[in-house]
Image (tube, rainbow, N blue to C red; front, side, top):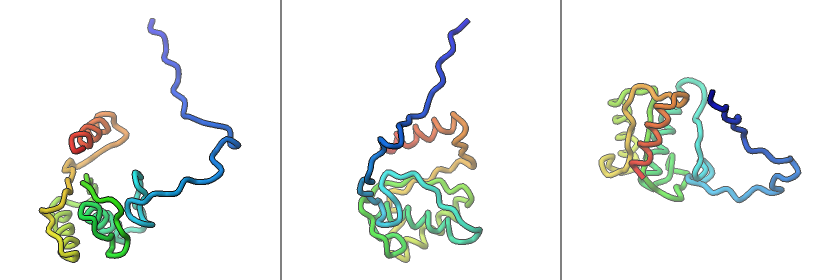
Length: 137
């Protein structure tokens, strides 16, 4: 019989040992998206969540202000997964956002994941995503 592995615990500390002051936040997109952040864009249906995500992608890839207002502090490549829109719609919207900023989509480092579903609760999909990110680094 195989010995059981001990259960993995999440890290924790007594509350009085938590930092008294927050570190200064660094932004990828000033006052809009934290550097090195993982986030979620949520809201009511049809409130332009997809357009915000695509504008963020164009802005980070090009170094231009997001929504023509929020400065990008560090530009770089973007890996995008548009779960709800077809590839032609994503392309048309990206081209429109680029045109409004005087940019050419083909000059930007935006890679689009094209699988129809991506389940982060499935180990195989998490592994494939990690491998994809590593291949682009």
